[in-house]
Length: 305
Image 1 (cartoon, rainbow, N blue to C red):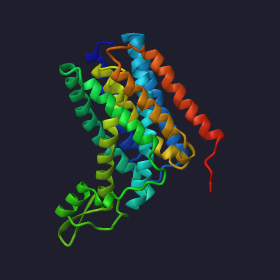
Image 2: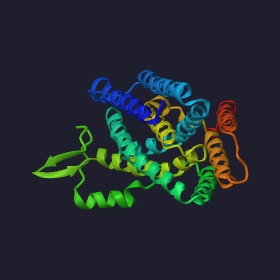
Image 3: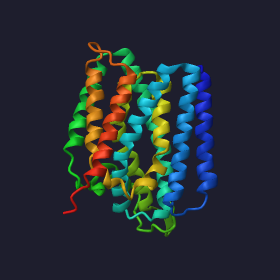
Image 4: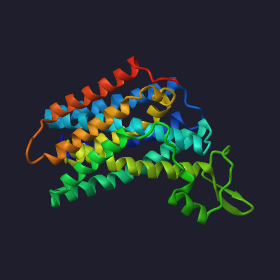
C-alpha cells in the first residue's frame, strides 16, 4: 500500500465512522449502555485490525508489526486516561447522557493536537538524532511517576490556569441539563460545566500525549504508522470508557504494567545506537507484561479495607 493510498483509505474510514457515530448512532443525547459501548468498542478494534491486515498485505510484515505494537501501547496507555476522565466527569458533575458528546469533540481536538505533535516530533528526530535520548529519559521519568502515583490522588481542576483563563472571558452557569457548551442568559453568553469538562479533557490528553507519542517513536518513526496506530487507538477510547469505566478500578496492577512498558520503551530509545531490539520482540514483551498485570489484578483482588 503506497502511503498516499494509505492516507486516503485511512482518512475515508475515520471520517465515515465519525459521521456514522455522531449523525446516526448518537444523534440524540442518551446514556450509553455497557452493551452498546462494548459493541461500538468491538467495531473500532475490528476496523483497526482490518487496517493492520491491509498494511501486512500491501506494506509487509515489518510495518504491520510496528502498527500493531504502536496500537497496543496506545490502547493500554489510554486505560490510564479513563481514570482521569471519570474524575473530570465527577468533578464537573456531567450528566451521563452528555458525556459522549464531550468525549466526541474532545477526541476530535486530540486528533489535531496529536497530529501536530507527531509530525513535529518526527521532524525533530530526523534533524536531531539526540532527541531520541531526551524522549527515552522522558519515558523513564513517566514510568517512575506512574509506578509511584497514589491511587486516591485527586486533582483540583478548578485551579488549573486554562480554567481560570476561560472564566475571565465568560461567566459560568451551573446549567448542565441543556447539553450545550454555551448558553445565553440575560443577553450575555455563559459557559457551562460541559465546556469546562471539554477543555480539561483536551489539556489532560495533551499531557498523556507527551508520554504516549514518544513511546511509539521507540517502535517506528514512519509518520504513517505512528499517526494511524495512534489515532485508531484514541478513536476507540470513547467506547472503551463507557465499556469499562465501571470496572477499571479492578485492574489495580495495570499501572505497574504500564510503567514497566514505558520504562522498557524509554530504555530502548536510549540504547538505540547500541542494541537494535526487533519490533516483534518488543511486541511480545509488551503483550506479556500487560497480560501478567491484568492476570495479577484478577487473581489478587485489591484489599477492600
